[in-house]
Amino acid sequence: MRRGSEPTRVARRAFAAEPFGRTFTTPLYVGSALNPVNSSIIATALVPIATELHVAVGATAVLVSSLYLASAVAQPTAGKLAEVLGARRVFLSGIVLVLLGGVVGGLGRNLAMLTAARVLIGIGTSAAFPCAMVLIRRRATEAGIDSPPGGVLGGIAIAGMATSAVGPPIGGLLVGAAGWRWAFLINLPVTAAAMAMALHWLPKDPPLDRAHSSLRKIADRIDLAGILGFAVSMTALVVFLMDLPRVAWIPLLVLAVAAVPTVAWELRRAAPFFDFRGLAANGALARTYLRQALTLLGVYSVMYGMTQWMEAAHGLSTVASGLLLLPMGAVSALLSRPLSRRNLVRGPLVTAAVTMALGSVGIMLLTSHSPALAIVVVSLVFGITSAATTVGNQTALYLAAPPDHIGTASGLFRTFGYLGSITSAVIGGIVFRDGASDHGLHTLGLVLATAGAAVLLLTVLDRRLMRGHTDRKAGAPTASARPAHTPTEPRS
Image (cartoon, rainbow, N blue to C red):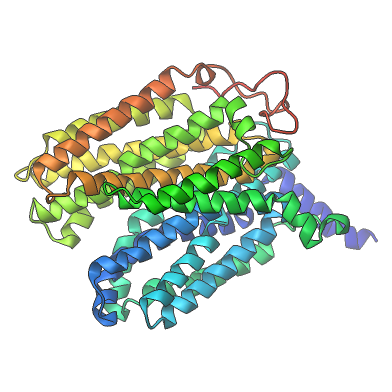
């Protein structure tokens, strides 16, 4: 008996000494990198895919939009499933879907198969971030840690930003050396490694209660009707946004028909999938979502809009344009870790808003005759914006979200980020509708300066961000149990 209990005591001592050791965090980091790397790596494969499949290059844009759409819907859904079924189970299921998507894409013979593969990859990779937040929150509670584990949250942020930045160069090397199919097949070795690490290192979920494990009970607990209504509404909204400035009336009609009954249904439920009342009562969480969407609107506008301008107006090659924006991702990744370790919220958010405004002014000063150094400086400023907003908002999310709904809240956090990135593509299409010119770039800068001013107002006028640490025992208000007082925010 004594000999058998010794490993348990050793494991407990190791957990108490370092609850967020590498064996726990590494699979979470790898899983969190899958979505951004798949979002960016496809960019270098679009032209070769169009050439081999004999389709227009513009038709391959569906491979980009399908993953964004699938991710926007699947992120909060995966978070809800993680809360009900267990984060480790959902995390592993997501990895299986990514593996399947990699196989389907690698063997795909037409655009329909590749689109299906991208949808599978989008759904599968969406499980990682909300499941990681659930597991991190559970781990912190078990270890008796009150403050946010800034180093771990920073690692999650770096996993996303660094892979997003290096995705195009990696994709260029893979596609150039082995063909476009490796933009899909790269998922096979990565998911195999993530699966092995998750199975061996992530703590097992509590066993499911048999009384609540039937399909009908699970559907009721996750609010399947609410999820379906949200999926249809979000799909219609994204399709409508992507068609702007042309007004697509059918998606708009579908949005109205789906959204109204979905909102009515969610307001009647005691534990809804999308808690409208809880979100309205939890202003800190709602403002976090809005700040994230507006700031990522700026970051992605630089990544996509400035790339178009550099190639069309400045006359730079695709490779040169990508290299000039590479420092933005590098600065973002380098700044994330030191910022996150201090668990700051207000300071980074103010920095994000100010640098976004300054970078937007820099965009308005650029011309087709500006030196490459000026473009790099502007991209570096937005790199600071990216790091500061990701770290500040992610910590604010951790503190403002109800502990028992951290999965769904984390998924919605990412969904709002996707809406920001999709809107950036819409704005880019509008300002460059007559071609990527200096005038269009300056108009884009003016739009981003306005968005930066809105983020600054959302931050400096937020009294919650000026208070002390969150009262984590009280938590944040939910639909089922709203405390009489609300939590305060972390130090600035």
